[in-house]
Image (cartoon, rainbow, N blue to C red):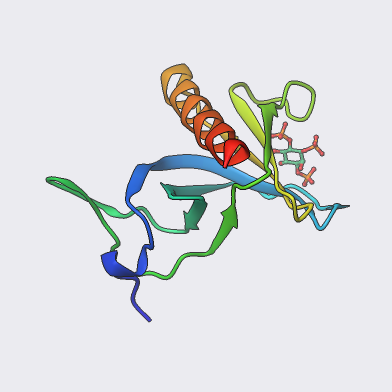
Length: 128
Ligand code: I3S
């Protein structure tokens, strides 16, 4: 199946490449498996794609792959993963489902942008 722009239920607020690993599933710890992911923030959802989407004038376009997974940001807890990785610039996200992720970029600016926008979305959802 091919992901189309209309399959994305909400406006894309941000998209970009980050290193990602899942570290827990339903509260159960998992072995890390860092991999590059194309991350799309749309509405309440953070959507992960394996392959980068094509950047096009006026936005981005799925390059023909289904999302690997997506998570609902409602009730999520965001913090910096200071003691959870040897890498720098690591965001720790814990979802209400007990699934946990680390997101990382070598770029300070890139990771700060993601932290800020994720914090804004989570706070907005907390107020709803
Ligand atoms: O938290 P850990 O166990 O130090 O995480 C490292 C390991 O997952 C390692 O793989 P092995 O499970 O084969 O030892 C990864 O290659 C490392 O990247 C993990 O640590 P960092 O510090 O990169 O998150």
